[in-house]
Image (tube, rainbow, N blue to C red; front, side):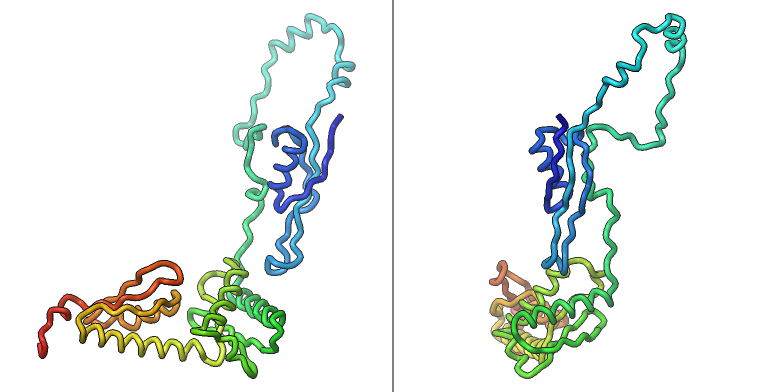
Length: 274
């Protein structure tokens, strides 16, 4: 009896693997019919659909061939067939064997990346939906810079979204960036801003970097800056990259990673008034 099963999976490959386990057969001995491909849904979060296949065990019914074949062949016909050369396979065509294990997903054309304009629009739409689900009534405007799509949140009380040290704003930016993944061209990054916080934060960090640089040079000892995220650490590094009296290095891991401002050898050995 030829068993036929309809099986679902997150992907077509997963559904096929389930069919192999259910029927107790290797993949090359199954006949697979794809009923539905998987879909990721809205931003990969809502409306996701599983892949669905119909699987059955391959079988060849030899009875019609046996009944149609003559019981005894004339000797002359047998000799004629023996002397006839069999056609050779066309080597220019790809061979298909029972050992083929290439996933079906790899045979599909790769998904093209979105344009910058579409990517930014999708990011704006997602952030608006996220704010709506948070129960806050703010609008989002899109501004383009040379290296970023800036999503600016506007409305009364939008400053509440900044959080301590910009943590809430950073969390929103992280959600937008990770949800969209690598669909964009990667030429520009996504920046979530409100009430010019990013600009004010940058000015404050540059001023802090200069003060700590002077402190390190004056005391001729390294100065350690409090732990910062990667974006803020980059601002400190850039602010002091042309300061010949100090060098900067990052130390630590994860949320405890911090910057150390180190006076140069010439600065450490300089004499007062030299």
